[in-house]
Length: 455
Image 1 (cartoon, rainbow, N blue to C red):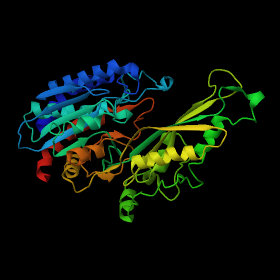
Image 2: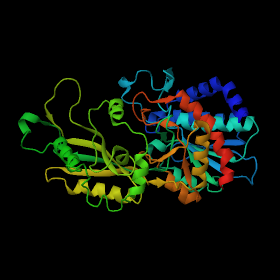
Image 3: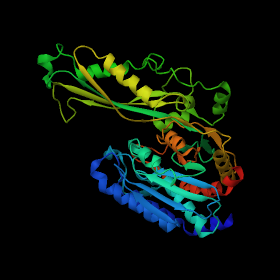
Image 4: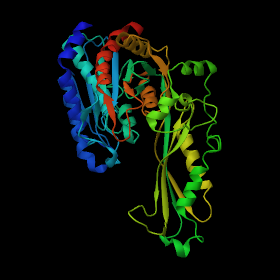
């Protein structure tokens, strides 16, 4: 569609500048001090949807951060695509590791560096510009709806209530999400699944106050030592998870699918060099791609306690804390796994300490059938603009709302991400390649063009 290319090429600079404006808003959902920034960002998304040609766009209040809804209905009898994304971002800490301000986007080496550049402002905004392209060139073939939330990074605690109370508003034939990655721009891929999530926090308490480590050391259990031992006990020598019943419901992948996954290009040396490690680590009996796609994991996300300031302080701390997450695969339930994790840490606590363990949030794993209309349309769209068919892969991340959407709306989800695993998601110096951003805007209109032929 030359008319699309002509329109997009003539507005490339504006498309970029609009994204940079969104990236300057520190919409960190996890921090209460950013509440006003969340409202500001939701309003900005609403305005951009209207400018792109949406018939209407509204900001809906929730018990937490707002949800933005927009729609362009050109023909009620035509198929409808519901685009999901999120405008909230992860905290930028540690700030000292950023080469430029996390909310002061800069372009270096053809990449946008800023918090949210890939996850997920840059990716959902591709869809806003794709909508504009279709509207301005009068080439719509589907109705397009948007639901852009502000709580994905904290587990979408209020989205279920919103979706369940607005099923008519959100009615669609397919849900389209760009919050995933490709293998590379030379080897395009489509995620056919994401893992679920169980996230907990553990607090270990020993004495009723911090103690002098010389006077009391050796006589009283040190909460940090105990917590470290408890965490270490979660894996055996083969890096299998030791939580009782953890693997009970894991759906084992067929040999055929493992062979298909093995076809994806993978260079272990390049992988190690990109991460700055000398060797990889993981569950025995599985490849790196399998460990990050088809196997569940248990990871320590943060640990603290005692004195961590400048200089020395010989203290035996009263408390130690840890944040722990498990990534789940098909058939595993976040509720069941969370209950097992909480029970495990309480059960193994020695007599000298008390343990408090509580859930933060969770979500279910999700798979997309490769014979679904949405997947076929996405694959054809990508093949059209990349010149080669995409490889179906399983993503290692989690999008908690997927199972909720399918249950509430009765439609399948297709993942069509244009990020890269190396984009430093949730880390300092998050980035999004300009090429990927513009390639997404180029490709997404083809999804809408091809979808009707598969429905």
